[in-house]
Image 1 (cartoon, rainbow, N blue to C red):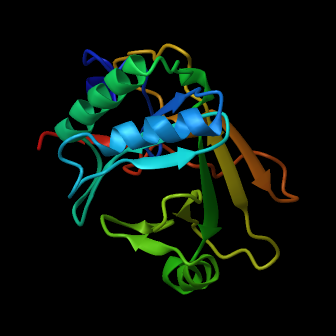
Image 2 (image 1 turned 45 degrees about the vertical axis):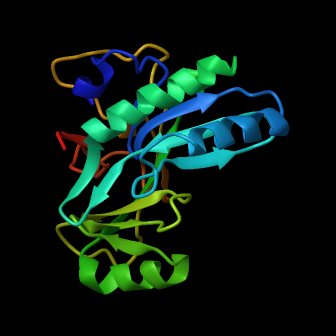
Length: 210
């Protein structure tokens, strides 16, 4: 995350749990479609492309490199972020970094291999190849799910945490970057808050030169 934010030309972007994201305020569906079309004409997108969410008033673009052994940011994401920002500026489309957010669902489980198949089938999710504790939406739309190992079974209650993170308007470049997942947590449980919560982990985007 730090390497991405310290690079030139990516001031429009924020790194959250699902990659580097930017929100472009187009103001209309037609203007958003023009931006998406312009992005589609950038070179080198045949074998690598961004995830784009087009809505009536804006466009969200996500960049992330996904491979069997890697889930994070790369030099390729950095270069594409610069190109997309330049394209938006050419079209006069403003950016709103503070709109970017991420959501993570965490499920406490004593026997993860026993519980995980149920959620995979119900949601139509798939395993994240580099992390056996995660399920992800293959369409890139739904919140990721992390199964957190607990020390002992609890027959009375299971905890499900929903964690949302909104990065600051200007990213803080700390020596030890904070995970956006630590921002807000809302447990679905009758048990008082405290105890087990999502922690910093490898699901947060890392960096690879490639």
